[in-house]
Amino acid sequence: MTAVPPGRLSVIVTYLEMTAPPAHAPLPQPDGDVRLVRANPPTVSFYRYLYDTVGEPWLWHERRRMSDADLGRIVLDPRVEVHVLYVDGTPAGYAEIDRRGRPTTDLGYFGLIPDFIGRRLGPWLLDRAIRMGWEGGTTRLTVNTCTFDHPKALPLYRSMGFRPVRHVSRVVDDPRVQGWLPRGAAPHVPIVE
Image (cartoon, rainbow, N blue to C red):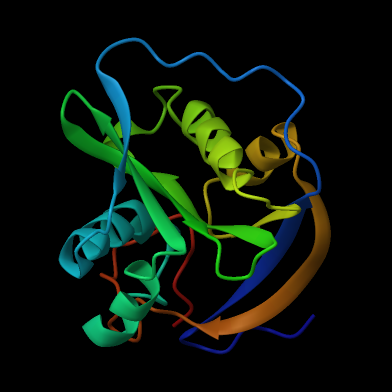
C-alpha cells in the first residue's frame, strides 16, 4: 500500500441503497420535547449552520467550499427537503432528503449536532427520514457514508435496511490543511504532515 502524501487523506466511501420501504414499525419518538420540522425552505445561512455544526467532527467540507449562490441552488430547490430535529427548542440535527433524481431519492445528509450524540436520537431521526424518503413514489432510497463518519453510521444504516452496493477508495485533500475546517476538527483522523 502506498503512503498517503502530506496534506492528503485516504478514505473509503460506502454507497448503500434500500429498494423497499421498511417493514418494521416506526421507532417510538424519544421522550421529552422532540420535534422534527421541515425548514421550508431553509435560509442558506441556517443551512450552513446545520451543515457546519453537524459535519465538522466528520470532516464534511464540500458544501463549506460552495458559494452561497451554488449552495442555494441545491437547498432552496423544492425537491430538496431539510428536516431539522429540535430538542427543547434547540436544533439538534437534520436530515436532507434529495428528490432531484426521482424515482430514486437520496438521503443526502444526516446527522446530529455533537451535543446531542449519544442520546438515542439518531436512530429515530434516521427512521423518520427513511419513511419520509419513501413518500411520493420513490422506488429506491440511497445514502452514503465514509470512514471519516461516526463509527456507528454504517452499522446504523445497515440495521435500518440499507445494503451496501459499492465501496470506493479515494485519496483526498485534507480540508483542515486546506483551511476549510479548523485543524482541531475530527481528531480521530490524523493529519498527515
